[in-house]
Length: 250
Image (cartoon, rainbow, N blue to C red; front, side, top):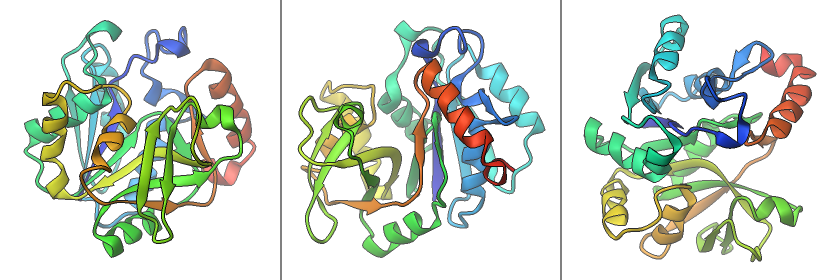
């Protein structure tokens, strides 16, 4: 299995914090968001290589970070060649770029570079291996306003996704989907097919809206917190919460 961390966005909603720094390198308790993600992946034996996809504007920042990062995994940084928000390839475009450029033939774990979560991913990988199907990570969310900002799924009694909508105006369930996806190797060519049809390139949940109608997709229900850092207010809120949890940060 390989892992891709999506870090090529320009995070304009976080300006001025991200005007000259990528969101994934913002710090909480002296530790970058990217380091939190790498630490999680370190504990997954199946993941042999981690690929970080950056834009060209911030590629040097990631290279500087890499020189100081010690990891047991193979670690690679890919430049998607864009220099502005207007040029961005979108998350799905970046995923396809890495798959094609690196000729990935393994199962693929995809993580957004702006999420921090307090639970281990090992059980999620175990669930994927048991199902042997594409998987998403979900939690029950009570706040409808929050559900409108994320993917929302409906599942049957076996955990199979029977409906999916990205950022729905009227959520059909309370099952919120976080940007932690595991795809079988035979699914990877479908990213190219999806883009060739002219579909939306941005939020990776749009690919899932298209995919669940073509292939079986299963939902893993996780416990613990998952924080999406999208605005200055949310960043400060997460900093305050996690810096009080010293054991988590260290």
